[in-house]
Length: 158
Image 1 (tube, helix red, strand yellow):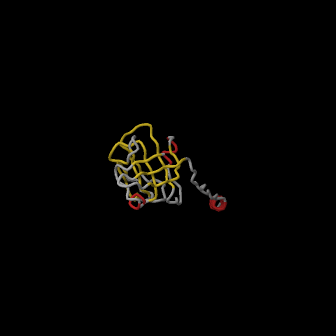
Image 2 (cartoon, rainbow, N blue to C red):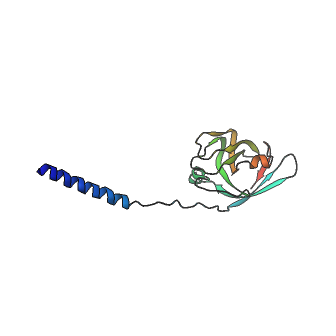
């Protein structure tokens, strides 16, 4: 009988602890990441004299390049992020924690477009290779590379 009373008391205390833990749950809210204009970029089309102007954020530190456009909910079509690397070599990107579908524009050290990865899917961790050496990567909203009719050989200025 004493054992049953002790077991009942232990169960009662345990259930009280569990119920108090449920009420103490804290909600952690993600801080919204907002665009910070750090420069301007112009794309020059090689087939005609068309120019496309963008406001850009620059990712030139290891942390900024690793974070990129993660945790963003949207981005206007006149904005983008320019990734700047110290060397020119084949690059691989992925869309981990990235909510916005993107076009990735790979750019050589001479600032000419060398390749694209179009319509990258949000949250997809598949590798998105440059397939050519690149020193810069420009990320813009998905579909803009086609809308702007960009081609390999078009150049950038920033």
